Amino acid sequence: MSTLTVDGLTVAFGGIKALDEVSFHVEPGEVFAIIGPNGAGKSTIFNAISRIYTARAGSIRFHGREILELPPHEVVRLGIARTFQNIELFEKATVLQNLLVGRHSRVRRSAWREFLFLPGVRRGERAARRKVEEILDLLDMQHLRDALVCDLPYGARKNVELARALCAEPELLLLDEPASGLNPEETADMSFWLKDIKEELGVTIVMVEHDMNLVGRIANRVMALAGGRVLSVGSVEEVQSNERVQTAYLGA
Ligand code: ADP
Ligand code: MG
Image (tube, protein in one colour):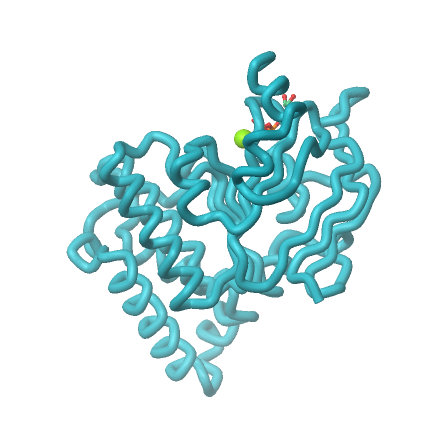
């Protein structure tokens, strides 16, 4: 069964359709890239999956289960985490604190259990710390753990956002332009980390990205979108050589 199945997804703002009957599926363990000019509807797909936007029509199934009726926190608990095109972190908190928040977004009722000193809290807390340490190691971020997010350069803040999403132990990770604003060296690091996330953690990744080098290095399949419609889905080469895709980019 596919990890994610999107069928006829339509999202509209007023009379304008940001997504018009978009359908695609994502298979377990793959890196699926979404490309397309600005305003194509790429971020809207993520906002519909994470239930920030409400769809007008269509369905989004995670392992066959319809998620369009769920509230946003339930989607995270099912195992879907995301990053944002514009970084969203607690700026005045440390890296470690941001990561622990990411962890708590997944663990059911942990805040109440902690408040009431219920059994199992200590164990849960230890597991959370272990997970956070694992992610800090994986992304080579141990030296940043006590830094305030607001003191970090842009590239490091992007890594913190990625790390926070991973601390929720997602099965499916939605990354909105993970390499935007990164220099070539940071982009190369990002591509290695994404490979590790896929191979070592076994996380399935859907990624919106403009950097076609990065897409070519790590994506198994690509979907090109323009004007809220799917133009082409296939290998990087297939999509790049598709005539409709080329026209959409020339017109952008
Ligand atoms: P992309 O991420 O591909 O650049 P978006 O998904 O952000 O594009 O936007 C697709 C279209 O939907 C654009 O025309 C955008 O203006 C519109 N749109 C997105 N979000 C909103 C919103 N909250 N309110 C009104 N229009 C929106
Ligand atoms: Mg976008």
